[in-house]
Amino acid sequence: MYKKLIILSITMLFVASCGQKVYTPLTAELSVLTEQKHKTIEVRSLGYGSTEGEAIGDSERKVFEIIFFRGIPNTSVEKPLIGSNEASITSQHKAYFTNFFKERYRSFITSSYVSSAYNKRDKVFTGTNDVKINLLSLKKDLEEYKVIRKFGL
Image (cartoon, one colour):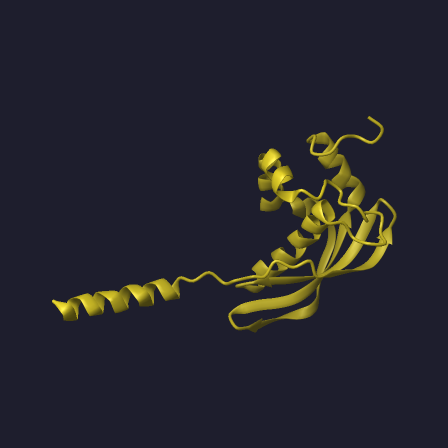
């Protein structure tokens, strides 16, 4: 009886350890490369993921999260584009952000390319992308979906 219980316990621990999700840190690691005031901004962003594709997507999504909720010093988006209370804003406009970060965010990227090769270390791929964002179009989209109010209203 004890032998079966021990074998069952070991099997359960083995199965549970194999299904672990890769931890990717929450970071805001980016640097500005170029900017056309209020029109486009190109940044170099660090991404993490369990696959190279996931890491590239993480790198691109982080750029939007920083523009929306943190801002980028010494640029036209120095202040957060939406606001700094991320939890409140994302819950208030949940449908928009779910849809946006699923795939829509890619429509605001004018160019994205790997600037340093993605390397795997401790089950995590890490690397950098240069991502160019169409800020003008992004602002219009946020206004249209009433996430931010139109300027002057």
